[in-house]
Length: 117
Length: 476
Image (cartoon, rainbow over all chains, first blue to last red):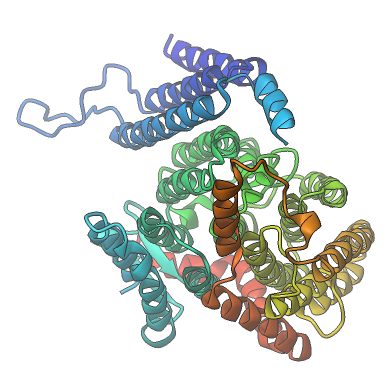
């Protein structure tokens, strides 16, 4: 049962990779990259899961340490922050591309560049 | 003390935020400070456990016989870039953060920490790549780099799941025959993207040819050297690269494709970008063989390639449409760098290729030498062509002056004046490129200056025990 989450993350990863390979629109490619990030984050959090485990906080009411592994959660937190930064930066680049070429379609951009050159 | 190499650039980067233009003035002093610290106050064989956590549980910064020379080289390149590049105000802060990140990625002994530094480098690289209105090239790099970064994270987490620690030293004890190749493949994808091995390095020509004096130097020289270090640390020091022949074949195909791509280009920037791909692919192929003489020669090759491309890209950025007739100093530096890339005798490049070919023949490897020789012939073809073209290019002749309508003439003339102003080579860039070109000549006559260092790096990187001894000082 607990393996389902791994399969889910791999399916989402596959969707992300398919998006990057198949989509021509640059914004859709950026969203696909974000989907890949999400899939990897789900996979990493799942790695630290312990059946019936508790939140990893030492206190008087959690004397028995059946905690889930906190390290993958810490790693994912950092990875999410980095992912958001990259997504924001990618969006800014797309705004610049759209302002310059008036399109986010690589074929149209190529045609415009050929005309300019 | 080791942490200063990361903390000082970062502190100055924050200090420069309220006054953006200060960043570019801080950069050379910070690089110089790092070099002084490395030469006079630090020596290999130090470890810093951040927060006094033992290396197995916390982050350890390791200064050993491999990271030490790489740090010196990287900080030297940053200093040279700070003196030669035309930095816009906001780039000072960015490059200070880049300095902290490249020092961090070389020093760290922790996989997740190296992922964080890699991502910092990547984000700065995307911004730097967008210089000169090159958002499309930067976006391509972002997509490739984003996938590469994700693969590195998966590799780091796989190490943690299997070994219970993120420390690089302890990761070497993972022996699971299924997990080790999986981890290596994750890391390898990242390196093939970041080290521009084709087809995953297809982003590079668009990024490097944007005509900036910062982008190809920061990404092609500084970031490349730091990632070659990380490649060496992971695949020569910690893990055995699974199926190195396959990596070698892929990189050899990349060399040939890149050289043919360079030959076909009508733009010097793109030709140099493909030449850079070819150079780094040669280094990756040689390093993947995991043999000390070949690795030493690969580091020598990297040294020559990085210095030569530094000169070529810097001069390309400033020349614009002009030739060497009114910039003879630049012309001499450009020609020296080109000859060194080709491997002409009396230049560092000759020894780089000689040592590499000799080591490969001694190891009974004949495919790579054949490809290096073919690549050298192609390189000679297009680099000599570009040299001849630039040396004989007319200056401000009527044919070169675009014809404009009368009404637009004033503004066009103003633009033209600005372009000429922009294409003027600053004094700092002229001195730096000439000094680096002379360095290539000096090493051409005294190759032992570099060869002794590269031999030491190669011997140390292939011997895991000193690194583990250093890590184990903290205990488990």
